[in-house]
Length: 360
Ligand code: NAD
Ligand code: GLY
Image (cartoon, rainbow, N blue to C red; front, side):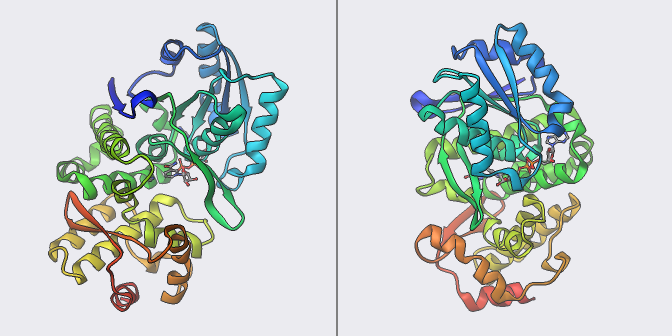
């Protein structure tokens, strides 16, 4: 078992990696929350793990109740947050009652938002069950729901009190979902940790084979990096933006494909194009885009816009990037690699050069 602390003063919390679901109750007892707990999940995850979590919580003295939201990104909405509030109100949950998110990033984001807003904030616990949720979405306090006009447009920064990971839950995760999470893992190597990048390269079969040691090592390292970045810049005033490496073109890919592609796959493509842009701008050497692209391909992820169901025009991709531009109040920021383990955040990129890179 590994414990990584996210250091945020009074709002600091532990990420516990490599525990069994049966240890949840004793961990939660230490948080001194109320005893009435809601486990928010979806039917897929509930069927697999819901009973174990509920049984364990009740043996630890909690009155635990499941709240189900249908499975899918299209249910990460205000309407479904409202359905969670209704379940809590009917069952007289109060300000001390914890909400436990059991599932992937969709459940984590929605439950976190409900926890941030129900009675102006109640204790929130994350039990991520996808690789993407373990290494990214469950840590750092970004919570939210989608609006018909844009993804993640409604939300709050709201830190969990505990992130609790049983790595065995990854054994039931479909392979494509696991690989999607691997894109975010590779991202951490490129932005912050050359050793992690090399480790992923040398230990591909072990990681893909879910060998406990290598898997725990990789997840722990990603959580350490995310914890460090979030501790220094919780609200994305500067440094935290490095976590968006690959996400600028990635978001555009998600938009033009109407959110039918997995997030990690879009980020994988985005990382390749950002690396090529960095090379064209003279920020990195020629070997870097090749290394990034090779590792992504070795992990079974797409590397090129040609895999899209329909190849979008560059103008479409630029238009899709405008949502990011509005959010940033000016020119879109790119996160570009200088070398493996180091990136820069810049608005100083040339539109013509990016067009050429995307057209190639
Ligand atoms: P997801 O939550 O949709 O999960 C993917 C699929 O796997 C679902 O069908 C789910 O039911 C299933 N599943 C989950 N755990 C399982 C398990 N152990 N065994 C079998 N099936 C399982 O997708 P995701 O990739 O985990 O998360 C994507 C979401 O995360 C998006 O909404 C994205 O916006 C959000 N996100 C948030 C942040 C953040 O910082 N808050 C960061 C990245 C992504
Ligand atoms: N997933 C990006 C962030 O948490 O900032």
